[in-house]
Image 1 (spheres, rainbow, N blue to C red):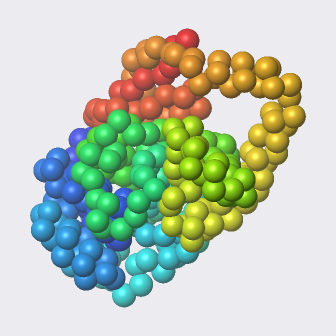
Image 2 (cartoon, rainbow, N blue to C red):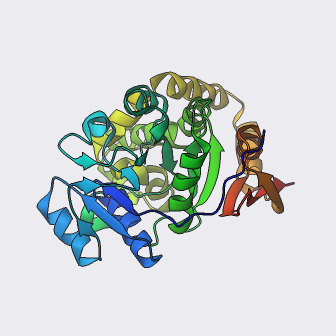
Length: 303
């Protein structure tokens, strides 16, 4: 059933955690004309955000975005004055555990999210207002998700320059295990193996090694929390990689090259504000690019 949702003035946004992701989001939203406040336990992060036009305060309302590490997610709102009517979303890289903790506490006020953006850098000094431009932003639509609140979170992502991919938490975790979490483990394995190969190998390392190991330059504690928080799907995705490595090398190289160099066009679509229709868009590999009154506009790949 399609739910009519009228266009309403966009509420303020409050960002909890003003490191790379949170600080970049706050800066992007300020640039987009949104009213933005935020909080971080680090005074330096608060000062940096304030210099970019973010009002630092413990009083949060509108759409509250949790941009803290996964281990801190459940207690991110402790000690803060949050409007009980606020919509709460997050930027965590794993969704099922966050839904089980934060989602269980907040009920239909919570909408899980994860922007596929970021670099190996961290902290407020890595803030980049353009970080989310063109990025995919997964936004969870569970059976109990309030569609009006989902749209509020979607508007935040769109205003930051991202494209919204409707997913369930379980679908998200399976997908990112393959495209994000296993690549972190492979980067770690490659770096460790080259380290064992000795100083000559490291001296000759160039573009392939740099590109293949870039992500493992991230904070090890953050990477460990990510892969352990999504252990089941990550183990399954890693097993699929091991199977691929057992193939004859010419076949493996050809198959990987075909996937990596495949191109697809885009077909514009208009989707009603309906959970099933939105999830079908995400499952087809598409994304939402614009919110309308009773629809969203977006695209699906066309091969």
